[in-house]
Image (tube, rainbow over all chains, first blue to last red; front, side):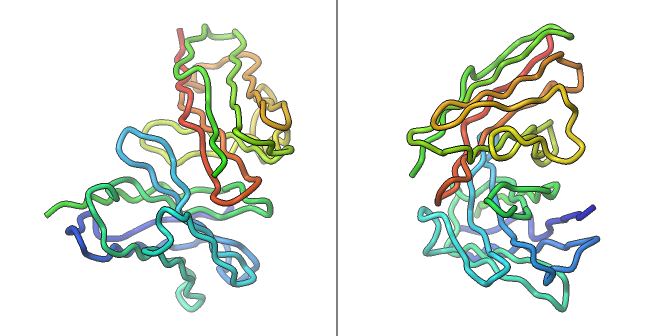
Length: 118
Length: 107
């Protein structure tokens, strides 16, 4: 069973770039999977950030597109998220996911809480 | 953007009873709708995809139905461990979007 574990700084300052990584266990990141990130503001619902497909295509939420980059590092078997120019509105739990063949998400990581505050 | 609306916001059901959750889309999804369960402090878990297909390891008491713009998740006999927030997600087009969630409480 594929396991995903997010990690990164729990605190970011406004205007900085947030960087998170997702360590992948029981699967090779280069073995045809597609990857994604989803976030959840405190006490709220889920927002898709973007997905990176096994063929190299990337799709991002238009609301975040200008600030987001998703990449994979096969040598480290991990996926990464970079979100630039963060504000308090970017505070929340960030989940790493595998994006299924028709864009459902399974499995999910446990999530990483990020707080944006000066 | 496809807007997905869930109802009710909260559902209180006795153990052993049936729970019915609804999800409505602003445009036709065909059968491209998924359901997730989220318990406190955990990441969501996929229950159903393509409207009716149970994910691996999901108990048979969870079933999905519907197509087009109207979808339903049914828990046939509610167990105590089913207390959670349930989200639907359209996987028909970008941006991929989620409903606001239905909280299922055990009465």
